[in-house]
Image 1 (cartoon, rainbow, N blue to C red):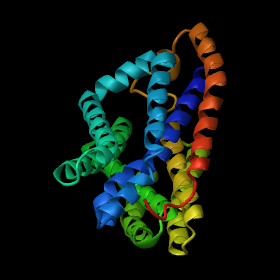
Image 2: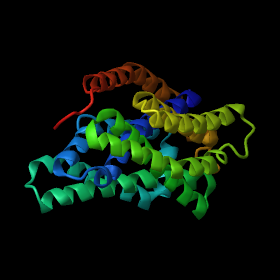
Image 3: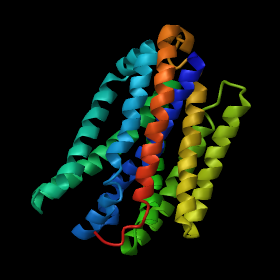
Length: 302
């Protein structure tokens, strides 16, 4: 039961990083890819219907940690208290910017909303990578590399998403941004992912990390060939495999000196959670899949 819930939590974090990853990338690229107010609206409209739903994966992942592994929840949030406060602040500022941008007067207020979107996206994307890298390796260099990797990967993922969802000048700039981002993300990915399974002999971790680097390279090649749909699938797969490698390296001791068995709730609690999860999780996944299907077309105008 404890292993099952560790896998469920890893799945929830994977969904969050894959879906919210391109949100962060779009927010970070807002001032780079848009030249006019119309283009800024076009960029923001690509994530407008889905960004708040993507954040539900984070709430669910944290809630599952609290219910299934309360010691992991408390230790994780306490260890990185300042970083978590900054993440919450970044998510608030970003959310306010996205919600208020269409309700305020053009000019200074819109510029402040845009600044909040960019700042929140960059800050949160960097901090998640920094937190998990510090948890695994504990060094300042690893923390910076982990943050740089997650930010660069989100930027690439967001650029590919914009190339998939837009037309015209924004699409052309997004393709160029994806190719430029790959120059930075691939070397950092090699440095980070090749070191994640260190200290273990698990072939599964090796396959996951190698697969992440391969799909990342495939995504770059596909965006070069203007195959945006397949490129987005490749970058999403790279994030999913990177997260799988991360949680595989954390298992069975997500916190130093504590295993999942020692941090788990009582068996009865896990049993009840399992029934709740089996009922609720498929509905959440189906609803979000339906949302993406409804808003699947490119944005030709706003």
